[in-house]
Length: 365
Ligand SMILES: [Mg+2]
Image (cartoon, rainbow, N blue to C red):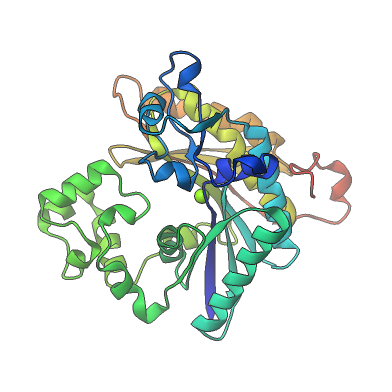
């Protein structure tokens, strides 16, 4: 039986910093622009669980966070470090498992054939131990035959837990949870659902009220199927043999092109790294955006020849994003909820082609 293990590193940026600054362990630590050193409108990027006890959360304005937790230690974000550590995590996983798919800078999935939930759970605990002992990183792991349920379970497992949801328990597991836990359901969708009296997934088991079907379209039936324990699992279908993609949902929606543009790079690196590991070239690059009004739009470009490595993606993706932005954003004040970079027309690396390829994206390859 096939199981997806969704591994999500806990308080990732803070955890990367604590590896270098063990003296800060057990204390409230916040990664983000330090508001005590001058006025800033920035937000918290990551908070240790000790800081969360004071109510500090990702995306909270730093000025408020500083008031809630005056004793916090503030550290500036070091993105190159976070990308480097993410590479170490992928390397560790790949040394032991054949099918490792990066899902974001701090998330990856593994799929495994295992006889029962107990075996899946002990595998997850073993991974957790390895990450802790060898890389000094805490992780939470959700385990289920469905990727979308595994992702939701990884959230419920935080911090440092494992939650296993077998097929026959999906509906029961989801029933009490707020609809907000489903990837893609933001505050606006949540409000639409609440207006029709739907707050939990369990309330969708009997079907979606007509008003919801009207405003959410096909997504309404996806939610109903999920609530009934039969997820359509778009997350799982995406990285099929024909395409690969990585995406990121933002804690705080992005309103500027420059912000979205800056988010492309870690996605491209993670995607290229996965392709290099699988020995796949790509010919089409695609980016996709989900706006805060829930509409999803995408743009793609097919290159004249197949490419290896991140170079072609780095060249094409920002262009596609700015084109999409020009056409879809101007004058509409939409904000980006989710950003995805994908590739298509994949082919296994041919013999002898190695010499022609671009340099691999990650140091471990
Ligand atoms: Mg995480």
